[in-house]
Length: 115
Length: 112
Image: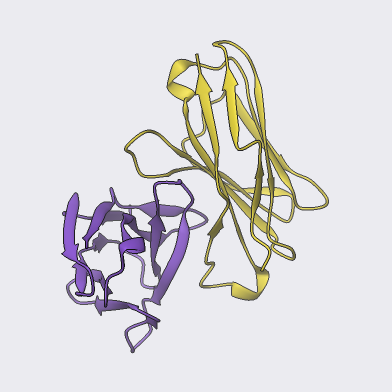
């Protein structure tokens, strides 16, 4: 079965640079979530989108922004990168047929390293 | 606010034996969902099992079962017949409004 696709899988950036992470949800999934997992930490919710509108916001820094496009893919834009942004960034998606339960299926993650 | 607590930073189990990973939660919501995810060393987060707060039966998925005790606010994961490939980080999680709150995780090591 198709899974969530994230690109790139690995990204190395310098401080103060920008980065764009992409997420392609499971086909027919309409909700996308972004999480940040620091080393040895549990994933922290950043932001979510439902039907191309922002639905909830977590601990996303003001330097980050995200959007969901008409084909339901989502992009996380990160500017003025800091060393502390080095983490594994997950995208997850959920299905409209799973409302109430809202099981989130995670992508493989993008490992961002800021030097 | 919702909170998930996993008190076992690490667990060891002998291959082919069963193991229980503990999870307690705190929420004021009447309706909620509890999830377990597995994170191998490769990093991906794999959905294992779900338990709804109104489900009367404990959830089971193959070798995974969830020991749900609502009054105690616990949702322990039981893995039967452990395999070497079960060695991984295991996260208990609860869904809130639109996000998933995770516990700190338990690192399970299966010994041959």
